[in-house]
Length: 308
Image 1: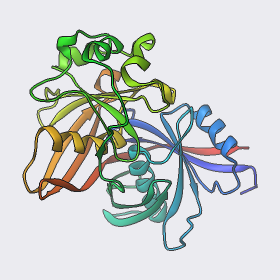
Image 2 (image 1 turned 60 degrees about the vertical axis):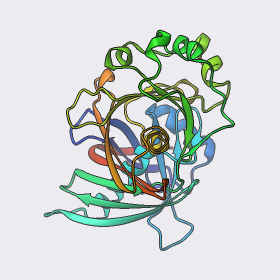
Image 3 (image 1 turned 60 degrees about the horizontal axis):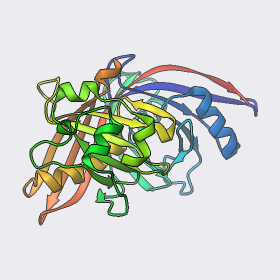
Protein backbone atom coordinates (compact mmCIF):
# COMPACT_ATOMS: atom_id res chain seq x y z
CA UNK A 1 0.00 0.00 0.00
CA UNK A 2 1.41 3.39 -0.93
CA UNK A 3 1.75 6.14 1.65
CA UNK A 4 -1.27 8.09 0.41
CA UNK A 5 -3.72 5.18 0.34
CA UNK A 6 -5.87 4.19 3.32
CA UNK A 7 -8.18 1.22 3.31
CA UNK A 8 -11.64 1.90 4.73
CA UNK A 9 -14.87 0.04 5.46
CA UNK A 10 -18.46 1.11 6.02
CA UNK A 11 -20.77 -0.77 8.35
CA UNK A 12 -24.33 -0.58 9.63
CA UNK A 13 -24.34 -0.86 13.42
CA UNK A 14 -27.06 -1.99 15.86
CA UNK A 15 -28.74 -3.99 13.14
CA UNK A 16 -28.34 -7.29 11.30
CA UNK A 17 -29.90 -5.88 8.12
CA UNK A 18 -28.22 -3.82 5.40
CA UNK A 19 -29.28 -0.17 5.16
CA UNK A 20 -30.66 -0.06 8.71
CA UNK A 21 -28.98 0.86 11.99
CA UNK A 22 -26.35 3.58 12.26
CA UNK A 23 -23.83 4.07 9.47
CA UNK A 24 -20.14 3.97 10.38
CA UNK A 25 -16.95 4.52 8.42
CA UNK A 26 -13.71 2.97 9.71
CA UNK A 27 -10.36 4.00 8.23
CA UNK A 28 -7.34 1.75 8.87
CA UNK A 29 -3.64 2.47 9.50
CA UNK A 30 -4.07 6.13 10.41
CA UNK A 31 -0.86 6.84 12.33
CA UNK A 32 0.28 9.19 9.56
CA UNK A 33 -2.91 11.30 9.49
CA UNK A 34 -3.11 14.65 11.25
CA UNK A 35 -6.09 15.74 13.37
CA UNK A 36 -7.04 18.17 10.60
CA UNK A 37 -6.99 15.41 7.98
CA UNK A 38 -9.12 13.14 10.16
CA UNK A 39 -11.68 15.90 10.64
CA UNK A 40 -11.85 16.56 6.89
CA UNK A 41 -12.30 12.86 6.16
CA UNK A 42 -15.10 12.61 8.75
CA UNK A 43 -16.77 15.57 7.05
CA UNK A 44 -16.36 13.86 3.68
CA UNK A 45 -18.08 10.67 4.85
CA UNK A 46 -20.66 12.80 6.70
CA UNK A 47 -21.80 9.89 8.87
CA UNK A 48 -22.59 10.57 12.52
CA UNK A 49 -19.13 9.17 13.33
CA UNK A 50 -15.99 8.05 11.53
CA UNK A 51 -13.34 5.94 13.28
CA UNK A 52 -9.61 6.17 12.58
CA UNK A 53 -7.72 3.05 13.65
CA UNK A 54 -4.19 3.75 14.91
CA UNK A 55 -1.45 1.70 16.56
CA UNK A 56 -2.16 1.15 20.27
CA UNK A 57 0.10 2.60 22.96
CA UNK A 58 0.09 -0.81 24.62
CA UNK A 59 1.14 -3.45 22.09
CA UNK A 60 -1.01 -6.01 23.91
CA UNK A 61 -4.13 -4.07 22.88
CA UNK A 62 -5.96 -4.44 19.56
CA UNK A 63 -5.93 -0.81 18.40
CA UNK A 64 -6.21 2.83 19.36
CA UNK A 65 -9.38 4.52 18.07
CA UNK A 66 -9.93 8.18 17.20
CA UNK A 67 -13.62 9.02 16.76
CA UNK A 68 -14.82 12.08 14.84
CA UNK A 69 -18.26 13.48 14.10
CA UNK A 70 -18.54 15.83 11.08
CA UNK A 71 -17.87 18.70 13.52
CA UNK A 72 -15.32 17.51 16.13
CA UNK A 73 -13.62 14.62 17.92
CA UNK A 74 -15.32 12.57 20.65
CA UNK A 75 -13.59 10.87 23.61
CA UNK A 76 -15.99 7.92 23.37
CA UNK A 77 -18.95 6.72 21.32
CA UNK A 78 -21.00 3.54 21.38
CA UNK A 79 -21.80 2.58 17.81
CA UNK A 80 -18.19 3.25 16.64
CA UNK A 81 -16.95 0.99 19.46
CA UNK A 82 -19.37 -1.83 18.57
CA UNK A 83 -18.82 -1.51 14.81
CA UNK A 84 -15.04 -1.29 14.98
CA UNK A 85 -14.80 -4.23 17.37
CA UNK A 86 -16.76 -6.39 14.92
CA UNK A 87 -14.68 -5.15 11.96
CA UNK A 88 -11.38 -5.92 13.73
CA UNK A 89 -12.73 -9.40 14.45
CA UNK A 90 -13.67 -9.92 10.80
CA UNK A 91 -10.19 -8.79 9.74
CA UNK A 92 -8.59 -11.14 12.26
CA UNK A 93 -10.59 -14.09 10.89
CA UNK A 94 -10.89 -13.38 7.15
CA UNK A 95 -11.79 -16.95 6.16
CA UNK A 96 -14.52 -17.61 8.69
CA UNK A 97 -16.38 -20.90 8.21
CA UNK A 98 -18.10 -21.24 11.61
CA UNK A 99 -19.14 -18.87 14.38
CA UNK A 100 -16.12 -17.38 16.15
CA UNK A 101 -15.72 -15.67 19.53
CA UNK A 102 -12.91 -13.23 20.30
CA UNK A 103 -12.06 -10.26 22.52
CA UNK A 104 -10.89 -6.80 21.44
CA UNK A 105 -9.06 -4.38 23.73
CA UNK A 106 -9.35 -0.89 22.27
CA UNK A 107 -7.89 2.39 23.45
CA UNK A 108 -10.16 5.44 23.26
CA UNK A 109 -9.65 8.86 24.83
CA UNK A 110 -12.07 7.91 27.60
CA UNK A 111 -9.89 4.89 28.48
CA UNK A 112 -9.38 1.22 27.60
CA UNK A 113 -12.49 -0.61 26.38
CA UNK A 114 -12.91 -4.38 26.37
CA UNK A 115 -15.38 -5.80 23.85
CA UNK A 116 -16.57 -9.38 23.48
CA UNK A 117 -17.15 -10.17 19.81
CA UNK A 118 -19.13 -12.96 18.21
CA UNK A 119 -18.75 -13.38 14.45
CA UNK A 120 -21.62 -15.10 12.64
CA UNK A 121 -20.28 -14.89 9.08
CA UNK A 122 -17.74 -12.99 7.03
CA UNK A 123 -19.97 -9.91 7.13
CA UNK A 124 -22.07 -10.15 10.30
CA UNK A 125 -21.10 -10.00 13.96
CA UNK A 126 -22.08 -8.79 17.40
CA UNK A 127 -20.06 -6.90 20.00
CA UNK A 128 -20.77 -6.15 23.66
CA UNK A 129 -18.43 -3.76 25.47
CA UNK A 130 -17.91 -2.74 29.06
CA UNK A 131 -18.64 0.96 29.40
CA UNK A 132 -15.43 2.53 30.80
CA UNK A 133 -17.21 5.21 32.84
CA UNK A 134 -20.27 4.56 34.99
CA UNK A 135 -23.16 6.87 34.12
CA UNK A 136 -23.35 9.90 36.40
CA UNK A 137 -25.84 12.77 36.75
CA UNK A 138 -24.50 16.12 35.58
CA UNK A 139 -25.44 18.78 38.08
CA UNK A 140 -23.29 21.23 36.14
CA UNK A 141 -25.61 20.98 33.10
CA UNK A 142 -28.56 23.31 33.59
CA UNK A 143 -31.57 22.36 31.50
CA UNK A 144 -34.41 24.71 30.69
CA UNK A 145 -37.92 24.43 32.07
CA UNK A 146 -40.42 21.90 30.72
CA UNK A 147 -41.91 24.72 28.66
CA UNK A 148 -38.53 25.61 27.16
CA UNK A 149 -37.67 21.96 26.47
CA UNK A 150 -41.06 21.42 24.81
CA UNK A 151 -40.51 24.52 22.63
CA UNK A 152 -37.06 23.28 21.56
CA UNK A 153 -38.62 19.97 20.44
CA UNK A 154 -41.73 21.39 18.78
CA UNK A 155 -43.93 19.75 21.42
CA UNK A 156 -46.51 20.71 24.06
CA UNK A 157 -45.51 20.86 27.71
CA UNK A 158 -47.85 17.90 28.39
CA UNK A 159 -45.68 15.79 26.07
CA UNK A 160 -42.68 16.12 28.40
CA UNK A 161 -42.41 13.50 31.15
CA UNK A 162 -44.19 10.30 32.12
CA UNK A 163 -44.72 8.50 35.43
CA UNK A 164 -42.00 9.86 37.77
CA UNK A 165 -39.54 10.59 34.93
CA UNK A 166 -38.48 14.22 34.44
CA UNK A 167 -35.74 15.75 32.24
CA UNK A 168 -32.22 15.21 33.58
CA UNK A 169 -28.62 15.23 32.30
CA UNK A 170 -26.29 12.22 32.44
CA UNK A 171 -22.92 11.21 31.03
CA UNK A 172 -20.94 8.00 30.62
CA UNK A 173 -18.17 9.83 28.78
CA UNK A 174 -20.35 12.08 26.60
CA UNK A 175 -23.08 14.27 28.18
CA UNK A 176 -26.74 14.09 27.14
CA UNK A 177 -29.94 15.81 28.14
CA UNK A 178 -32.34 12.95 28.88
CA UNK A 179 -35.90 13.88 27.98
CA UNK A 180 -38.82 11.56 28.84
CA UNK A 181 -41.61 11.80 26.26
CA UNK A 182 -45.21 10.90 27.06
CA UNK A 183 -45.87 8.44 24.22
CA UNK A 184 -44.98 7.37 20.67
CA UNK A 185 -47.28 9.93 19.09
CA UNK A 186 -45.40 12.78 20.76
CA UNK A 187 -42.09 11.11 19.92
CA UNK A 188 -42.98 11.05 16.22
CA UNK A 189 -43.86 14.76 16.31
CA UNK A 190 -40.60 15.82 17.95
CA UNK A 191 -38.13 17.88 15.90
CA UNK A 192 -35.28 20.24 16.83
CA UNK A 193 -36.31 23.91 16.84
CA UNK A 194 -32.96 25.67 16.64
CA UNK A 195 -33.93 29.18 17.88
CA UNK A 196 -35.02 27.56 21.16
CA UNK A 197 -32.34 24.85 21.39
CA UNK A 198 -29.64 26.55 23.47
CA UNK A 199 -32.23 27.92 25.92
CA UNK A 200 -33.45 24.40 26.62
CA UNK A 201 -30.21 22.41 26.43
CA UNK A 202 -27.38 24.93 26.87
CA UNK A 203 -25.11 26.91 24.56
CA UNK A 204 -22.22 24.41 24.61
CA UNK A 205 -20.91 21.86 22.10
CA UNK A 206 -22.52 18.83 23.74
CA UNK A 207 -26.09 20.12 23.99
CA UNK A 208 -27.45 16.81 22.67
CA UNK A 209 -30.93 15.58 23.58
CA UNK A 210 -31.82 11.90 24.03
CA UNK A 211 -35.59 11.45 23.96
CA UNK A 212 -37.14 8.28 25.34
CA UNK A 213 -40.55 6.77 26.04
CA UNK A 214 -41.71 3.48 27.47
CA UNK A 215 -44.20 3.01 24.63
CA UNK A 216 -42.48 1.02 21.87
CA UNK A 217 -42.91 -0.14 18.28
CA UNK A 218 -41.44 -3.62 18.83
CA UNK A 219 -42.99 -5.87 21.45
CA UNK A 220 -39.56 -6.98 22.73
CA UNK A 221 -38.24 -3.43 23.24
CA UNK A 222 -38.07 -1.76 26.64
CA UNK A 223 -37.83 1.86 25.43
CA UNK A 224 -38.22 3.83 22.19
CA UNK A 225 -35.68 6.62 21.66
CA UNK A 226 -34.56 9.43 19.39
CA UNK A 227 -31.39 11.57 19.63
CA UNK A 228 -30.88 15.06 18.25
CA UNK A 229 -27.33 16.49 18.16
CA UNK A 230 -27.25 19.67 16.08
CA UNK A 231 -24.07 20.80 17.86
CA UNK A 232 -22.26 17.71 16.50
CA UNK A 233 -23.43 18.48 12.98
CA UNK A 234 -26.01 15.68 13.29
CA UNK A 235 -29.68 16.63 13.09
CA UNK A 236 -30.71 13.14 14.22
CA UNK A 237 -28.77 9.97 15.02
CA UNK A 238 -30.30 6.55 14.23
CA UNK A 239 -28.60 4.72 17.13
CA UNK A 240 -26.56 6.22 19.97
CA UNK A 241 -24.63 3.75 22.12
CA UNK A 242 -23.03 6.43 24.30
CA UNK A 243 -26.49 7.80 25.11
CA UNK A 244 -27.69 4.28 25.96
CA UNK A 245 -24.70 3.95 28.30
CA UNK A 246 -25.65 7.22 30.01
CA UNK A 247 -29.32 6.16 30.05
CA UNK A 248 -28.39 3.42 32.54
CA UNK A 249 -28.19 6.20 35.13
CA UNK A 250 -31.68 7.41 34.25
CA UNK A 251 -33.09 3.90 34.70
CA UNK A 252 -31.44 3.62 38.11
CA UNK A 253 -32.65 7.04 39.24
CA UNK A 254 -36.29 6.70 38.25
CA UNK A 255 -37.05 2.96 37.93
CA UNK A 256 -34.82 1.86 40.82
CA UNK A 257 -34.07 -1.70 39.65
CA UNK A 258 -33.13 -4.13 42.42
CA UNK A 259 -29.89 -5.92 43.13
CA UNK A 260 -28.42 -7.92 40.26
CA UNK A 261 -28.22 -7.76 36.45
CA UNK A 262 -30.91 -6.09 34.35
CA UNK A 263 -31.29 -6.15 30.56
CA UNK A 264 -33.06 -3.64 28.32
CA UNK A 265 -33.62 -3.32 24.60
CA UNK A 266 -33.71 0.22 23.20
CA UNK A 267 -35.18 0.85 19.76
CA UNK A 268 -34.06 3.94 17.87
CA UNK A 269 -33.94 5.27 14.30
CA UNK A 270 -37.45 4.14 13.36
CA UNK A 271 -38.58 7.65 12.42
CA UNK A 272 -35.56 7.89 10.09
CA UNK A 273 -36.26 4.62 8.30
CA UNK A 274 -33.12 3.11 9.88
CA UNK A 275 -34.45 0.87 12.67
CA UNK A 276 -31.84 0.03 15.28
CA UNK A 277 -31.78 -2.14 18.40
CA UNK A 278 -29.33 -1.32 21.20
CA UNK A 279 -28.83 -3.86 23.98
CA UNK A 280 -28.21 -2.36 27.42
CA UNK A 281 -27.18 -4.43 30.40
CA UNK A 282 -26.50 -3.01 33.85
CA UNK A 283 -25.48 -4.40 37.22
CA UNK A 284 -26.82 -2.92 40.44
CA UNK A 285 -25.07 -3.45 43.76
CA UNK A 286 -26.16 -1.84 47.04
CA UNK A 287 -28.64 0.36 45.19
CA UNK A 288 -26.04 1.81 42.80
CA UNK A 289 -24.78 1.11 39.30
CA UNK A 290 -21.70 -1.09 39.48
CA UNK A 291 -21.16 -1.82 35.76
CA UNK A 292 -22.80 -1.17 32.39
CA UNK A 293 -22.52 -2.99 29.06
CA UNK A 294 -23.73 -1.92 25.62
CA UNK A 295 -24.00 -4.19 22.61
CA UNK A 296 -25.59 -4.94 19.29
CA UNK A 297 -25.13 -6.47 15.88
CA UNK A 298 -23.15 -5.07 12.97
CA UNK A 299 -23.18 -5.84 9.25
CA UNK A 300 -20.35 -5.00 6.85
CA UNK A 301 -21.55 -2.90 3.90
CA UNK A 302 -18.57 -1.84 1.78
CA UNK A 303 -14.82 -1.38 1.55
CA UNK A 304 -12.55 0.83 -0.49
CA UNK A 305 -9.51 3.11 -0.49
CA UNK A 306 -8.97 6.74 0.40
CA UNK A 307 -6.35 8.69 -1.54
CA UNK A 308 -4.84 11.38 0.67
